[in-house]
Length: 565
Image 1 (cartoon, rainbow, N blue to C red):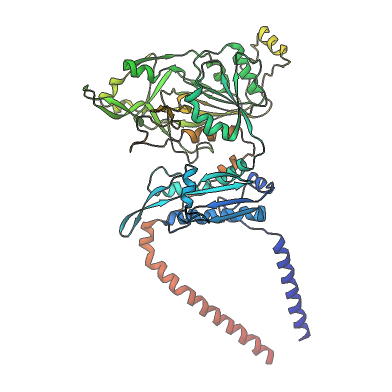
Image 2 (cartoon, helix red, strand yellow; image 1 turned 180 degrees about the vertical axis):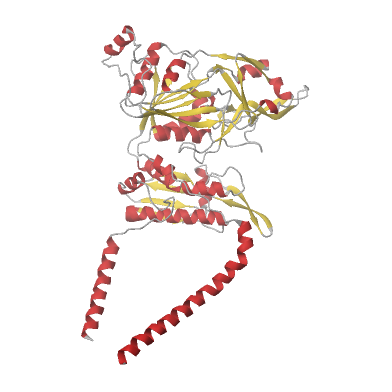
């Protein structure tokens, strides 16, 4: 008896110690193949560095279809993981958008509308047929009085897609981490915007400046003709749709900026082909602008060709089909609509991107440089050489589909690695003197790994102006804006993602790279083996209980029969 008391007492002591330790130190084992419950080191660092309480409101409370219930549950699991790291500094709640804000007559949906977050008119399948329902897949992250919205689901259509829901789940950590990074940032990265070579200014880049650059970055315009050196403090240097050729001295400034670790974001039209000329004359000849960038880019690993990409998957323009002044919206082959392959954090979970008069890009051999195609045409595309006559009369007749046989023509490329200077072994004494004059030493090759993005369309980043001098989002079609045919292209998301990747201060790309596999049941196999598994689930548990009872009785009988024999 005394021995048993000591055993019981020791067991109680061990249990108390285990509970005390567990209350202070937590650990979990993530057995999922894709490590969906394991936070990346960059996210943990963000959470550990929180100085004040951070509040997260998630608007996924309600009677949703199963896919959105899973998204809501996954969001709750993720935020619980956040709380494990940050402790009480993370506060989160799930709210129904139809609930009234305490002390007011307004609902939370009104608050979301003020952030330009509008519901998805979701269509789901039920026994009675199809059901339509408004869903607000959003969250608000608030820190020190500053609030940033988070979009949790970016479905391309009103129908639920398992692939899109899976992608939304895999993007949860990145979306929240990126919002926390922005809302807690004490300083902004400096972005340079090139001027002096005909780059657009004013209303044409309103969306870029007001909705992407100014909210999250410090912006500085930089005239390559005036300033001798691009400052190393600039995290990213943007060159958007230049129209005036670059001099060798200007190219040297760009080159040495890259060699010093600066990130280049170049979006340009190699050919001169503008809608303004087409609207006036109903035709335009596309010809090379001769920007004098070919040799520089070739050294870095790409060649932008003097051609135009045509795609059967194009955006709409009005055409006078019958010649009687009655216009009809038809797809325009010179305005390709790009669907991302989601092969990189920049284009993951990205919608359709709209381009205008884009050129094809070839990747060329460049030692130590990796190339990732970010944007490419559909499987029904082609290229035409220049000079090319572009006529509005082309769309009066149906396109000859048999000519559109090319697939995935590159129009946007990410280059990463240690770049070699174009001016290596060819730097003239006058250019070298210009560097020395400004206390700069020529660098023949970058010492650290660098990255740049080249897009063969400058219009991707521009916005149109509609009646009333109102700028609309970049990529939005002015002819369908406000109509039933309006489609929210993802140009803004692509530019934003590209800038975030290039200027990645908190290194959140690892979180964006996470992927969750969609494991759907084989319905045919389920139907074939349904009865077998039903009987197995019905009979196996009681069989195991009976078997365990028999074994226990046999062991007990043998134990006590030997004891008293």
